[in-house]
Amino acid sequence: MPALLVNIEAVRQNAARMKELAMLYGFEWLPVLKQVASDDAFRRIVKKAGISGVGVADVLAGRDPENDVLINIPPARLATEAVKRFRRAAVSSVENLEILEAAAKKAGRVFDVVLMVDAGDGREGIPLDEDPEALLRAWHARKAQNIRIVGVGLTFGCLSGLAPDDDVVGRVLEKLPQWLPYMDVAPGEAPIISMGGTVVWNWLQNDPKRFAMPAPWKLELRMGDPLLVERL
Image (cartoon, helix red, strand yellow):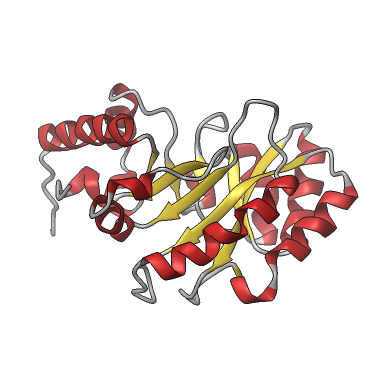
């Protein structure tokens, strides 16, 4: 029977190293646990390294509603499970928001989301040229009680292979002042710019100044590979 051997000690070292780098550069690392890294052993290692939150792609794999993040847009049929199992998910339409709002209201909790923006990857999110601000304005006017839009998300290097560069990311950063009034964050809480996947690291590390997001935004990196393959 096929087997995959994982060097657990190397994984521990990788997690600790990523924690150090996150503190050094001032970003938040969201370890993405899927496929082989979805085993509970990886959760324990990440938690021991001082990283409470993890990202997972499968709604039914969520187990910690205070810390787990669903990195995908949950299907409507699993909206109730999503708000019960996670602290945050992704959205790309008013319909997504309405479904999650109803599920969160029924569950009696406030649920956070990030608005996915398609900067050219063609995978998920509102195309940047189609004015994501219109959705933010429409939702903000509804004064929803159970959903908070706490940031925006971008995906690079997955199915499309699109890599971040100064131009494509710069177009998003230019929009941040327009989007900020629609972020549902508490006083002193920073809205997030959530970028994934691991290919983002190479782009950022080539110029460390890129880690500094315009105030008051905070950078979150969604990356899974650093746990298994130390390439940073």
